[in-house]
Length: 385
Image 1: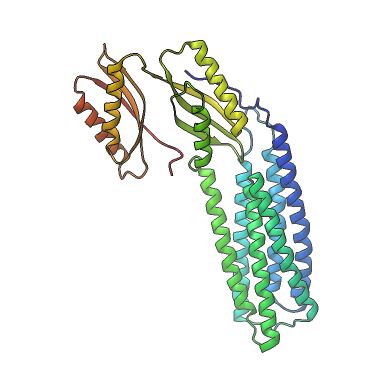
Image 2 (image 1 turned 135 degrees about the horizontal axis):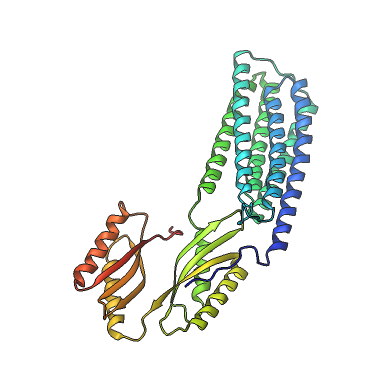
């Protein structure tokens, strides 16, 4: 038995609108700050013939572009669901995060090429006090901007903002290194401009690859959030007659946008009307407390009347859990008249061969109860740690 609900009829609209405004406001701040920094750094870099400072300015422009992409992605992700995309457009935010990662990667590669050219054909920089003060101020601004953007991104669960914040923090380190190179040149007349530019470029490339890898992982579909899955199961089993909650599957349709399904164990004495009310109550409580829409709740019936069946269940549980990689048994039901037994086994991903581990556990049960027909299914814990 399952209970289906429309995925759009839930009281989350105000929170989503507030989240969108927060992301856009933070991105606009990032654009303004980066454009000003890029302009000042470009002027300083060109006047002082510093390739490192010029590359730093280009990096600031790429950051402004990243913030613009974040705004566009957030606006598109906030579109209402329609026939073509009934679960909404939330995953567009992951695509915008991927584009930002590619921009960072491209900026790093381009910078590295230019740095190598300068190593082959070096130019002597010409620094002055004003240029160094501007770079020093840029370092301070970038540190503050990076911390602010990342903290907001973590608060509203925006990967695009988190990526932009991390990139800004990295930029502050880069700007600080260009400042250090300038001071070194003024004190000892040793120019490390081109070499520093190459190192900076490699750091940017590494950062871009890391961001891209993380975003692709999310698009492919990662395991359920462990804490979220645990808290949902606790909420479901908080109902007195729910003896167990299993097979939780969460589908992510964008940050803070989750649909899911779960199986519950209830006594076999439950009537259809009581079961229907229980399912409705569970659905609303999970939505209210976790912002997750349970589109389906399956039901396992637990035998409560026959002591022999209860003892058999415990014996089967002992047999299967004796196997190292069997984490859980649920959905057990036995029909004595038909000599039929059914159950599900959760097999860990740690098993070298999950199907083989499952088969051995089922065979041990078959050996212990040769007169019974077994109906066993292999399950997965999608939040396995």
